[in-house]
Length: 159
Length: 174
Image: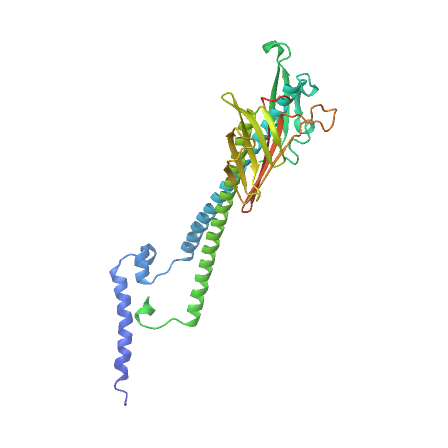
């Protein structure tokens, strides 16, 4: 009919693909779902939706973990700073009472008191500080002789 | 893979989709990286300002504690007299003129001391000395001489930290 060359080329195209598919099927007896990653790439089999979702879940969890650890570290450092700040306010209060005592040990500010607000007694002590600064002065005359007092400072800090 | 073997190219739609997916992945990875770096820098700045501020406060507190005189007292500098093996010496603390350093002048027989070392530096530092404790609560504006409050604010990057303490100069009369 005048088309001698065409069927030859057509048939070669047809035979190539089925051969490749047959080769792949016989070279590995496992099913596509059970094959390892490398074999999958060779066989041109992609990941299932469930596998992709699991991979994304793992990736997002690890990313959240990394960012969360940085965030926690920052919070941890901030807490340490608040603690240092509280300690300095405690020291400041304690030394204020010591200064009063050195100047005049009969000062009315040294009278026994229970859990009183140091920020109210010394208004300049910690303006704008979020935590509490409390002091307690206990009469310890029985233990250390007449006129002996013990000072305790309790500072709380915002978390 | 099969496409590569039969030497046929990818279609425009495939390339567009692949580019979109790649750009989304790169964008996500880049933003995670940038966020991590930013968070790390925040942590480091916070730790650095705390370290500088608390170191200066401890330094001043411990040296002023043993002082027996206060020859010079200003808002940003202080000179105290200390006893060094029977000899009176002078110690000075000051905020540098550019507000970036705290200078410490070790014990010296000259008043004021002249050689100093930088004990803290940051983007900006504010150091203030005050006498705040009233000698008698009933009498205003008369303060105890031997009690000094020290306030320091250190800024580095976006982080600012303020610490405050007070110290009795134990060798001095009130």
